[in-house]
Image (cartoon, rainbow, N blue to C red; front, top):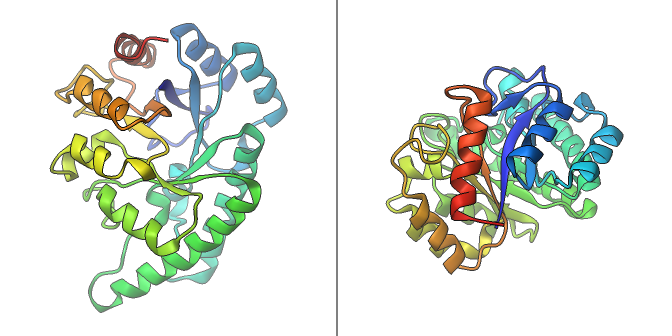
Length: 271
């Protein structure tokens, strides 16, 4: 397994769950020094970065961008795939397609988290689901043409009322039936929603392409009560060989949080 850290450009919204929100060159070099294998890049839109410059820097530092996350697309102005307004849904799909274009260049994946949007309540719930499935199908087909995997991230009920469990993400994947739609578990959310983190990881191992790590308090692994040795043992046992990426709060400071996560994960996952 490889370890990663979530970062964002300087103008990232306050709601972005990243440790470093500064000049990306600085963040990438910090990640290299701390011993990470890659950086997850949280983007609001594809034009936020100078892709040529980032590509050269990654090569120089020997790092990867395994994932481009789309959380800020929703946080910026409510762009999402369930919105009743077709124009808003189209804008959300267009923004995600732009991130897919960047992902193709960096040989990355793109996640679908809160940008999927919430479900309407009552008898209009199914209409929301149908809108999401139509939009996800369009995204999946575009991503497949680009050779990009799309990672569907279950999120806890306090943040969104749709796809809270890994099992629910898998149900969507089976319904859509696109080979490039995968699951991206986040153990912070799993700690709230799943009966057993380890049991869910084992049960749906064939769908998992990427994993987010944060402790029970959203701080760096080792600063809360989650049993990361057991979680990592399970991932190894089911044959997972991808990234575990720290998507954590910058507590007590960005540098200290990133260093704590790297030390802790490297002790469990030496190179």
